[in-house]
Length: 73
Image (cartoon, rainbow, N blue to C red; front, side, top):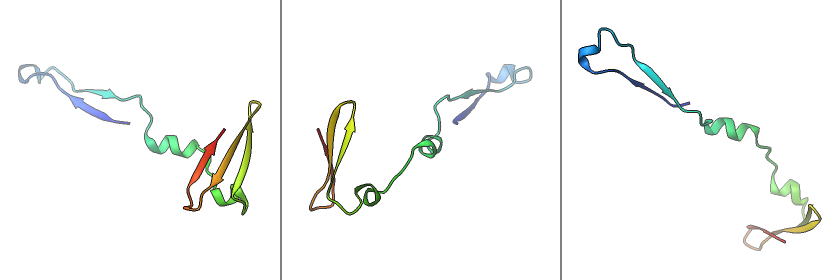
């Protein structure tokens, strides 16, 4: 969470209190902790291609010669 402290002009400093603006955006650490991770080696299980079925369609996850992953429909 990002915090910024702002205060009023000098004449009103005796009576004023600083206030904080808080960001409602989650921190990156909070986002990544909830995301599941799996290694491509475990997912492919020694193969070079995997077929994923999603909502009636098939997607092919392929490992290239350059060790890159390509997902195609």
